[in-house]
Amino acid sequence: MIDDDGKNGTEDLENFDAAISAGEQDKVKEILDQMHPADASDLLEQMPTDEFEAVVALLDGELPTEILIELRDEYREDALEKLSDAAVVDAIDALESDDATTVLEDLGDDRRERILEGLAPVDRAVLAANLLYDEKTAGRLMQREFLSAPEFWTVGTTIDFARDNADDLPTDFYEVYVVDPGNRPIGFVLLSRLLRTERNVGLMDIMQPLQSDIRVEMDREEVAYQFQKYSLASAPVKDADGRLVGMITVDDMVHVIQDENTEDLLALLNVSSADGSDTVLESVWARAPWLGVNLVTAFIASGIIALFEGTLDKIVQLAILMPVVAALAGNAGSQGLAVAVRAIAERELDGDAQRRAVVRETLTGLVNGGIFAVSVGAVTLLWFRDPLLSTVIAVAMLLSFVWAGCSGILVPLTLKRFGADPAVASSVFVLTLTDVMAFLSFLGLASIWLI
Image (tube, rainbow, N blue to C red; front, side, top):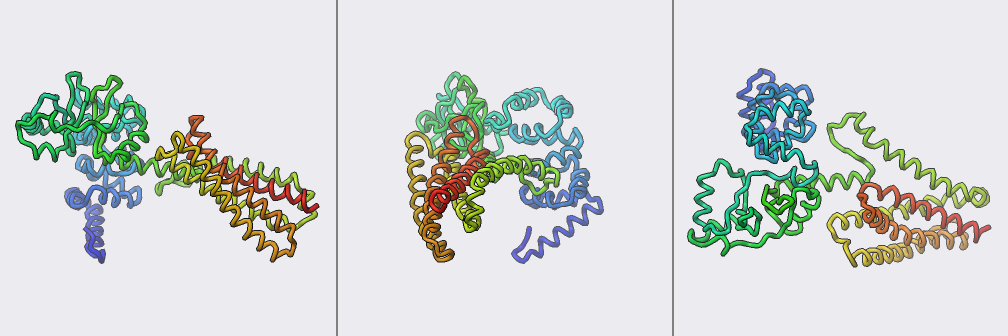
């Protein structure tokens, strides 16, 4: 829609704005239909709120469902508020069960009940069952539409069945799941393999063993890990008894992986939310609690400094050099923490790998500490012409780096062992511990050696 020079894009946007102003529903829908749903959703999200709501109200039941499901959560919720109940029912009918469940999640309880009543009994039962699963589990992610076949079917029988029941199949799927008489998946056949095989060949002869083991109650982060580990395009979902009840596809997992990575990144920065549409109040509410926690930890570090008030009064140079030790040690701890949290998320720190990681980070801190101890000691010697002061800061730097290396790996591992999310609370603990060690070692050594 947009050329390299952007001219066609500008003209289309002008036509789009003109169509909205004129209330031309058909023209607005035509322009949106010409765009990829993701691009169309981006266009709508860039509009002022009142214009966005005007477009949704103008289109109502004509708003393409592909665009509705691509909208970010807060925009989709806003759009659903403007759509009539009939339009929402039609949208849910057009969506696959996983996307339909997402739409239902965005509705208030009373309206959700009204919408469910407007659906066919079978669809209502399926979607109501999906909503019973926890929000971040495989049960919420899965779609109920999939293609399965008994183990005694042939390739020809499977293809004929798929053609005869095309309306009941998902829009996109990549595998046929082979099931036993108890409807338990025992393997899968890739569509590419199915189409290249003679009709009289049995599915058991070309079936591949399942690589994943996903249950409805499994956390979506574990599901994402299995998709990443086994390079899956799709995977069957089983209930508590091992029966096939749904399917998850890679397009859903891309969003989950992105959401989980964003969540971990924000948690490391002590922010619980970050969205371009957040209001000032929402931004304050997302950040202020963690700033309050940091305030408490800052006073802890200040308390350590207060213990050496007499030393600071006698040797003013300590106040000048003190931030250098704390800053470098804090950065070293943050580096180790970032590596550790990522490794934990990727399941790289299980078993003996934990011990190796602790040793590696400790030795890394020791080597980096030695390098910067010499560097900082030399700068201090040139600056203040005091060999003993330069020795104090060099030793304090070495100790702080080793401590930072240990803290960066041990804190997240400890939190993980106690069932906490390492990404959420680790940074507060690590920064506090490194500050305390930096001030304690530097001012403590100065009190012993310089006074």
